[in-house]
Image 1 (tube, rainbow, N blue to C red):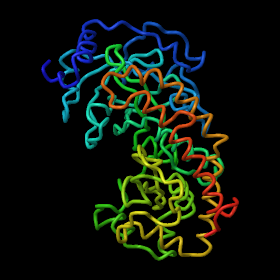
Image 2: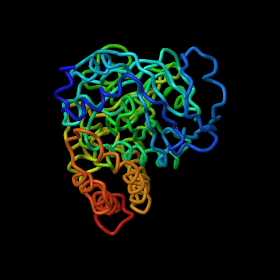
Image 3: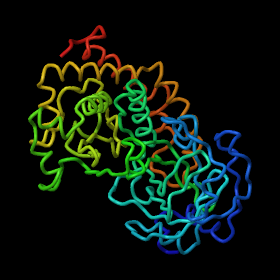
Length: 415
């Protein structure tokens, strides 16, 4: 168990002391609705078991599963053996270890591994991927073969908050089918010991493509043109800036609506403000691509500028953001973009976002105070998310600033 010493003696003892005989815990304490039932001792199932598709909620078109609803704080109870836990919690480990996820009254066998690639203070050992051997339909109707937790930023509510804004914009324009990943916050327990509170995100894959595009015949280009191949669709897309040709490759109305929402949120390291941290999703049946947000742990920026320019990338990089700048150079498209900024501003209205943020922070605050070894203190989290904290202050100031930028407020001009 030497590999766990870096986590601190209290955390190591807490986790390893519970590996031998985890006690089944009911999910009834989680706000998931009476229709899910009270199952204190869940049955363990394999993903091939037909019972996965029995007794689940039927989701209406466009309905968000309770796993990803704002009012819900899921709890993932992950059971695994002592040796497997030790193997998992080695910094830089790529080990994929067997585990059982207890959630919503069921227990589901699969594997868990670290997600690597982030060396932030909360990145190492605090971001995971759970895989199942086949898709599972959970009791709330959500169907997936994978769960992913955040890339590790300490600021656990940033990505959830920003996606909630994008979701409200999508609800304003159902005709656009604006892409967004289901996102929430989740409490992770290893053998019934609280380990972390993390962002929970929908996996980028064919299930997401089916939900958004109505087909599983989709391709994903991570980071768009950044380090992209020079051949095939993405190679041609990255060389195409003529509006007429581009319109056959890119859903321009969706691109503008999506880009305006991201820029309204003053992103820290995301496209189109920077050339990376996004996904281009192509419907291979139609040949048309649309943007999808990814890695929004710095949206809004960790040091947000309420007066950041929503019309120009703060960090331009050659042609990598030229689609954005060239489309905004077209007067009619710029007008459409300004209107989209107005939609994003309405979705960010402090009357909506501040009570929502207060509710979510109340859900996680006590848990954050109990997370072993987390780099931030509760005082620091309060300074971020409390009603007088940095994020609420940014939302108020950004809302006022965008009023001028879109011509619907008292400050600034319609650019």
